[in-house]
Length: 580
Ligand SMILES: Cc1cc2nc3c(=O)[nH]c(=O)nc-3n(C[C@H](O)[C@H](O)[C@H](O)COP(=O)(O)OP(=O)(O)OC[C@H]3O[C@@H](n4cnc5c(N)ncnc54)[C@H](O)[C@@H]3O)c2cc1C
Image (cartoon, protein in one colour):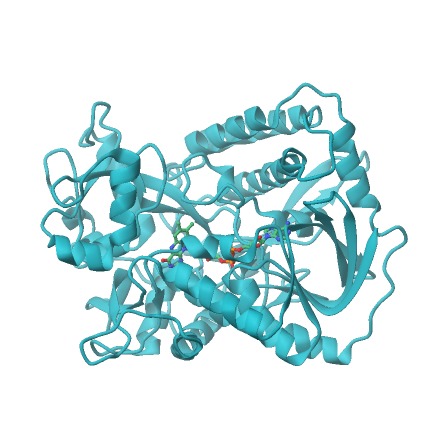
């Protein structure tokens, strides 16, 4: 077993982790631990853009952006946090520009901007061009740019190191335990500050835009430590996944003029959102699509999807602005977007919930108690800037703004703090976990349990939910957790044992699915991405509050999920009806 000591350890080398590393490593000794090679992080799959009210192509300002973020989030957004994000957005984009990110340009050479859902001028009057982009490869460019800067700054990376436990002593975070994929060796990192930037958990669903590796490890690890998770019932379903596959077609397709149509070729969004139409927020568009299908206006042999129509756009325009996603349509569905409409249906996309933090990125042990030495940023965190529904291109923004903030806060704390003692036998939990799985003779298969989990989540906890469907999901998850106790790992070796790690990841997915469903059952209202058919209205009197879930053990050692609530921070915007 190897031991390491760093002032700051960052878990994750996506956009949030590397943006944090750039700040932290300037100030103090920093290590980045990542289960993937950094440039394979999911940030690199992001397509459409990163928004900031630069006002390069039309009038705009950060206050309008804040309003849209709050309204788009169905008033569950903490408004102080949204103000920080939207005000710092302009510098966040300019910082990336200075680092060399090749943004698309206007004819005058300014950073170009395009439409995205829910982004409007003057509080909803009309759509506004706010999203900065590099064709439909914005995330790829961000990830490469940040990685190059990290290399230039000699950031120390530990690639293909899976963090499997957080070490805490007397309520303080003091280190992490990591499993090295190549050797199967364990590494203990002691640190003054630890930043979780480990991304989302879209793999609880079958139909998802998320990469295979998005298994919520950071949330799963802190959850097992008894730390809370906030607003886990809010999961975003992106309207335009390739039908049957879930592979994402960016909202930029509609930002560039694409139109959704039903089997009668009707532009149905005109009925649901007369002002902004196809550029309504994602929760509304996803529900509208599901509704068209339910009411018999879906397309295809089973009427199971709707169509995304780009055929009225010039091929040259498509090639310049949407090259990757149109290629996806050709490759995966054999559809030619120049001349044919593309079959699409909502796909699980983004976790609004996560590890609760304040605006500095400090992780919270309860409604406002900070955990000394622990930070979180990016999709793993819940600040909460996205509330009940994230606006398109606000995540690439979030990871840059709050990644930077968490990196600074972690380094500043490390400058004043001492290294704490680690617990006795710090590796024991991970040894038990890994050896338990490796030596298990159980006959349950990882892939089968995961497929069953994803099937019940798609069926019962997706765009539409009811008490009945959520209870069914919970019953199924309990049964799957029981089966998971008998899971067998076929590869018994130490080197590159991905079979073993997939079992560990499945354990996180099962835990997080359970928290999602329990939180969703208790929220008897509809808000943003959480739509309850049995409580179809938003209920501000009883539910304008964040859900805080805690893992507790009863006297027999059984896990209980206790729910508590936290007020939403409101500054200037009162809740209003969400019309677009
Ligand atoms: C297909 C797609 C398109 C998108 N398009 C856009 C867009 O156009 N605009 C926008 O704003 N948002 C978009 N999003 C959302 C956005 O890309 C993500 O929310 C954001 O990039 C997440 O960044 P992150 O740094 O938090 O996590 P990630 O980029 O997912 O990185 C997570 C990191 O954590 C590491 N990690 C995870 N678990 C462990 C562990 N146990 N041990 C060690 N390391 C670990 C991984 O190796 C990885 O480096 C898109 C998402 C998808 C899936």
